[in-house]
Image 1 (cartoon, rainbow, N blue to C red):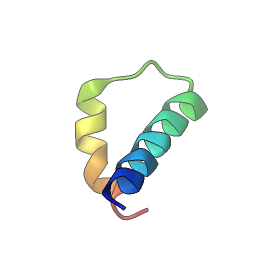
Image 2 (cartoon, helix red, strand yellow):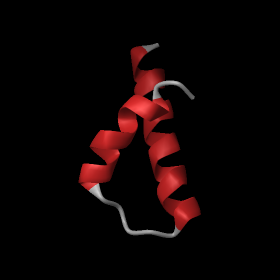
Image 3 (cartoon, one colour):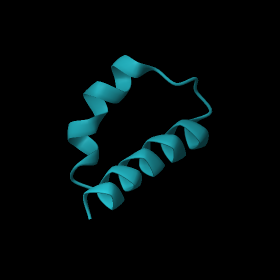
Amino acid sequence: AVIGAAMRKLVHLIYGVVKSGKPFDANFANKGLAIQDGI
């Protein structure tokens, strides 16, 4: 279950980067994780 949750977060992160068309920014990811927890 833990692995599934981690993979789900990764998929959301990758999807967000692809959808926005912006290059990946590690600092933005750290700020955005708290927001993504609610999704």
